[in-house]
Image: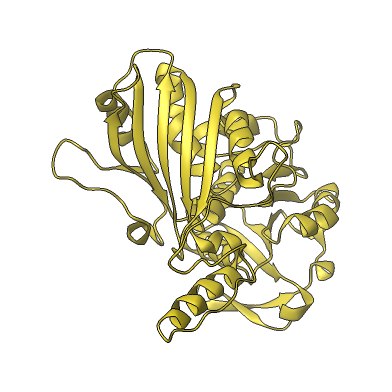
Length: 333
């Protein structure tokens, strides 16, 4: 089997570390692997299976000698280096939001729209979707194929790991402080996150929606491949890892919850819990370090015809980010 030279940009962050784990756990055919991060991290080591890799700066990389570069360092770094890397024949899989809505850049969830990679040539950029768009697409695309989605209403419950390691530290320190009657003011978040939640992820637009809500709405349309109606409210919750979503789906054609559950239960990458037997559902804690999209509480919405509700839970650092990027590379090879 052919082996590939791989670089992970942002290797010391939450997603970068998880990406190295996914590459190792899935036995991706790696020849050489490089870990790049900011100047502050140079000289540190990150784990790759049983070995460690010394961290370098992105400017030390020769992209003409790298087959796949996974960019996990945010839009600023992607804007500066991704096109340069691609111009040297390297395939860039970018986790930032920078390229996702560009017409000539594929936005890929392999279970939903891998066909868009059919004519992809090495030395281009592929966008990895938002951490909520990915599990939503995994769940909704097969249902759209079966009964044509008319409208989706989503409420997200997003963990702090989606905002990075400093956000996780803020939740931990604020929670600890509460037990000794102290208050730690927010630095990462707009308000206290410990024992609290708030409907605010990203900057607000003039029409009142946030960046995160806009991303999910637009990305879902691009991945599904149709201009479906999408309404999203994003909420940050005091959970360390895993995002959850309450999803209401209205279809143009006849379908009920039982039929939807049968469709979803037969698909790879999805674990469904039936409402018919014992009451069982997935919580954020249950799915940490799991690769699958967990779908539970699938039930009919009795207020509207051909409409169902469901609860979706996923480890946002794995299928919501790192694993999906690795699966894109696997699809290409």
